[in-house]
Length: 295
Image (cartoon, rainbow, N blue to C red; front, top):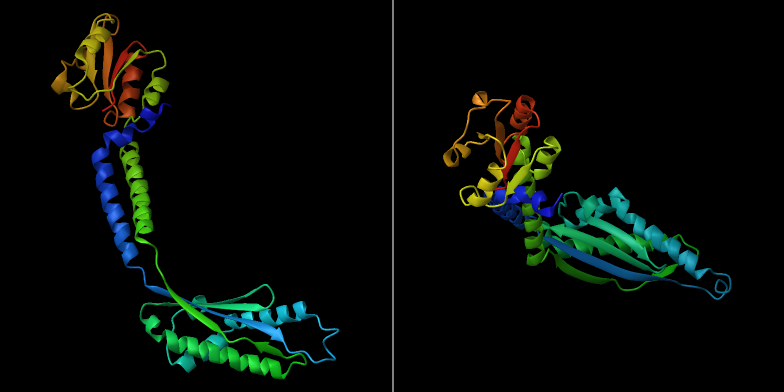
């Protein structure tokens, strides 16, 4: 199917396409503006074992430190740990489970990530202080019971606002708008049972001559149209869309002589229904011609 035929519904339904594109794009952009403000805080520190002279020759530095880092990262999944942070900070954090995460990097570094939204951002310092306090408390408890204690570097804290740049919001909004607008244009014709493509006509009328008029109805090439009509014996025009009777002298289907007349069906893509064409084919067979207006 030629691309011009494939995209023809977009051209015919340009008004609907434009309205949907504008409304959906503006609506999606407005929704993006309503997304909550998010601030991401990263807490970073490193671990290092404190070795005695007797431990040094046999101590597996990498494996032991990795296990320690994994153990500390796992605290983020502990509901009690999160509850202790909120309690110490004196704040309520909704869905805290999804806003606090930790991971190890290599085998000595631990990264904690805290994401706060809207009103929670104003309590950022309290929550971070409580987080560091709870980490330090549990780290001391873990170290006390360990035969191979660790030292933790001073935590580094960095915060940044998280938001999509304006250009990304505009592009995303336009993509949503284009998608909905395109679907709307095709859906309007498809759901109405309309003929949308020349390929549909060629498949339905395999042996019938078809003249395709690319210009708008009323601005079409009348000379070309006349030449096509005169190639038939006793041509009779039959309209399949309302506007056809304004531009042509039509013949009612029941006045056509099946043996001496040749029906010429005036078809307008996006308006003529497939069901009507199937009915006309059932009445006249393949002994007919088609004049198709793409717009």
